[in-house]
Image (cartoon, rainbow, N blue to C red; front, side, top):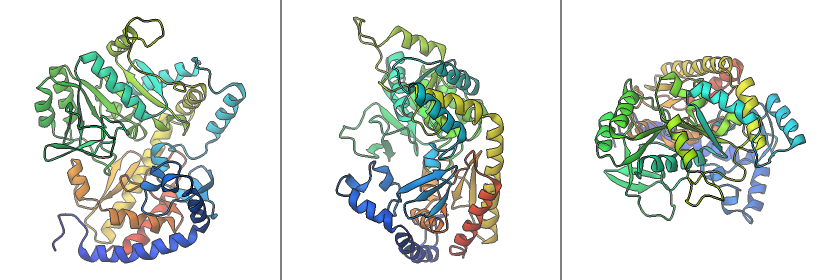
Length: 456
C-alpha cells in the first residue's frame, strides 16, 4: 500500500513498531514504583490519575514525580529526566525557579488570598499592556476560563452568538470550543453531553477567503484563534492572513480575539506584537506566574466600557456579565505573575531562549539531512518540532498528514529511557527559560540515536 504524501514508509513503520515494543518494555521495568502507585491509585481515581490528562496524553504508563529542580525532574524510581515538554507551557520557567520560590514564601507569610485586590495586579497589567498593547485586563485561574469570559463578553457586546474558529485549534475544555469540522459538519472533539451548537463554525487556518465568506453573514460575535496553531505541531500564519481577518472583522462588526496561551512564550509580546496583529482581545496566562494557576485576558477600551456598564454585583436590578470566581486574581497568583514578568520573562530572556530554539531547530534539520530524511524542523521562537515532510503545513489537515502517532509515541519512550522528557504528541520540544546550550545538545544527541532507527 502506498503511504500518503510525506507519511512514513511501511519499512519505517515496521522499524518503529519493533522499537516501540522494545523501548516500552524497558520503560515499564524502569518505573516499577510508579507502577505500584498506579495500581493503588486505580482503586481511588478513574484511570489511576488525579486528572485525566496525566494518562490520556501518553501511550505509556504514567510516571509519578518525586521532586524537580529547574528543567529536570526525578520520578519515584529515582530516574532523572531533562524536560522539553514544560508542563505543556505551564512550566516554561522551570519546575522550580529561585524568583518563584522567594515570591511564594514571601506571599505565604502575609496571605495568599483575600478576595480583594493587591498592588501586584497593577504591576501585572503594566507588563501585559507593554507586551500586547491592550489597555485593560482581567484575570482568572486558567486560560480556558479566560476564553470562556472572552466569548461571553463578545456575545454581550455584539448582540450575536456566532463563534468562528480554526481547524487544529485548542481553546480549552469549553462546550463552545470542543468542535471540529468534517466535510462541512460539526463533530465533537470530546464528549460534553451537549447538542451541536448551531452558532459555531470551524474553517481552515490560513484560508482568509473562508473567513470573509463566513463573516459576511454578520452572524458572528467573535473570531477566536491562535496566532499560530500549536496543537497539531506548529502551523505558521501566511503573510497577510491576519491582516485579512482583521479587515473582515471590521467590515462585519465582528470582534477578533487571539489566544496567546502558548505563543506568548515564543516571542516577547507574543505573536500579537511580533506580527503586528491588531486584535480586540488577547487571552493567555497559564505559565506567566511560573506554574501558579492564572489566566488573563486583555481588551480594548470599548470592551472595558461594556464590562463596566454590566457589572456583576449584589445590588443591581438587572443581570450583569457573568465573570469572576472566588480564587480569581488571588494575591499569590498576582504576586508570582508580577515577579516572573518583571524579573524572568523579560526581553533578554526571550532572546536567549529564541537563540536556543534556533540551535535546536538547526540541529534537527542537520540530523534529518544526515539521515536522508525528507523532513523539516518546525520553527517558532523557542518552539521546535518534527514535520515529517519537506514543506511546513499551512493548515491542520496538512499538519496531521505530516505527523504520526507511532513516531511520536516511540520517540517519547525512547527519549525517556535516555533521560529526556520529550513533548506530548500534539506539540514539539520547547526551550525553557532555564535551558542551556548543553541541554539542547543533549537533546540532539538522543535525537541522533533515535533517527538512526528511522533512517531509510
